Length: 153
Image 1: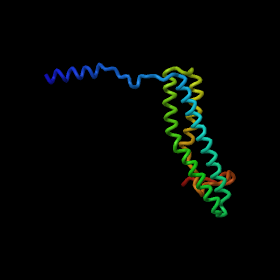
Image 2: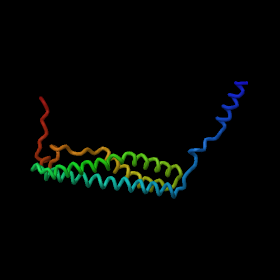
Image 3: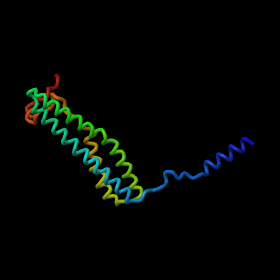
Image 4: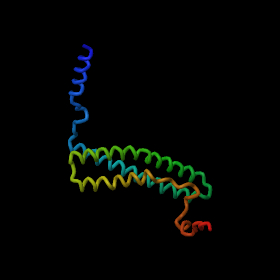
């Protein structure tokens, strides 16, 4: 009797269709989310690069040990880091929505690629960027005069 109950329970569980994730969203909503995520990544990228640029300018100008420049530079670095931290999750969500748009054919492949590629590239640049260390904040003229070490004989 127990075996019969177990078998009937197992059959009913296996026969029950899984419908929780099969509900598809309308393309208009998917495209709206895709556009919104793309804009958010772009805004974070603009903020990050502006703050990074400001940090470098403050560090270059702050070599005279001005405490205000140092504090402002550290504030810019902290704000840039805050922008950088949220980008991986935004990119993950963007990729998921882009995959959903592709699976439902909400956009032609060429338009989807034209939206997907620049956004992913922008996010990757931020993810892999590192703030320069204090001693590496130099001008381009310093890089041109630095000679690489020679190979040992």
